[in-house]
Image 1 (cartoon, rainbow, N blue to C red):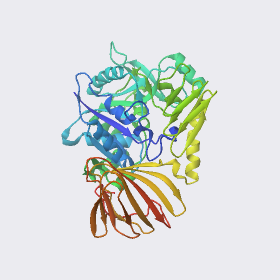
Image 2 (image 1 turned 60 degrees about the horizontal axis):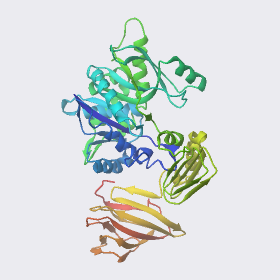
Image 3 (image 1 turned 90 degrees about the vertical axis):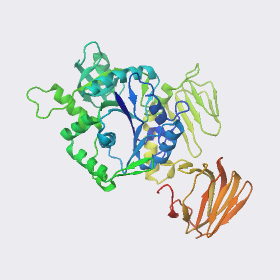
Image 4 (image 1 turned 90 degrees about the horizontal axis):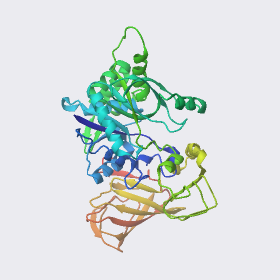
Length: 486
């Protein structure tokens, strides 16, 4: 049977600030090992027994498209990247994926996975997915409930009902419940039929579209209209912007799954036939890595329960998470702390208060500060730039251009630029002239001059850019040509 991996990559991960930012969220970061969370999500489906895997499909915000395409390219996993013009929650995102998967009369089994979760026992995960594929092949909508380890108040729950298939752990879904208070969560744990809601699903594309037609025809119609107005753009599939903006926002659970559960528990004639909703218990080292304390739980620790990454020194510390991206972090005599250092921010929080990191991000947004949304190092389809220094009327950046990378042909109204090549070769367009610069050579781009930077070589081009002028914002760019369609 053919399984279509569908990775939903729409979250911003604000509780993992300052590593996770709105423009570069947690699913794009290598928080566990060398792979980003998105790459690990794609990789964990490789080798499911007796199943054929289609190339991965990612549904994401337009802001992440080039980084995701590059991460898939580095894995050797080119796939379909469906771009949402604006966020409309998981039900419309999955509906777009089902429409994409249904091209050419195909009807694969969709394996729907959030891009930002961690699963440490891949073999156990694949075994349960293989079982779920059988039920999805038969027309059911399958979800996977995490066997609870504690009375967790940060997750929604699924109550399992009657046996769905003999000699399996699969059960009909009795109901979905919201995040409970502690007393209710303790009762759920004691009762034994409640599982954490993982956000993992399996169903045939046609089954999902039929369920949306029955439950939320307004969302289905908006997605169909947006899809009909869409087009392929290189690695990306774009949908109609205005049509999708008119789509109501709803989650998979609210739009369909809760209605399936209610139908299963109702008596009498059913007005609308919906597929069976099936939940299978999953014990595979799962975490949604929703906050820093959750990341601490899944990372390897020393004998004192500490996690240290980067340039970190710990003295007489316990149960502490310390992550450094550059500068030295030194902790002495502390316990249950989270300390995270990036180039432009430092977070210090008690492990019991990590859910409140979102309040810091909200404060930054209210104050209009860029630290809420972007890192000092900003990734672009051609490479990256790092804001090294800035002051009144000047700014210094370190620019790295990938081999064959090409910046847009552009002009600035308010600033001039000096470019110094540190390593590699730069091809410069300046007005009507084109020339090459090598290591230790430089050039000057006067204010108002049309210019372009390219890397014609086979190694990365590294440069220092010094900007000077009355206004140095990124929005002072007039683009005339851009190979990336920006």
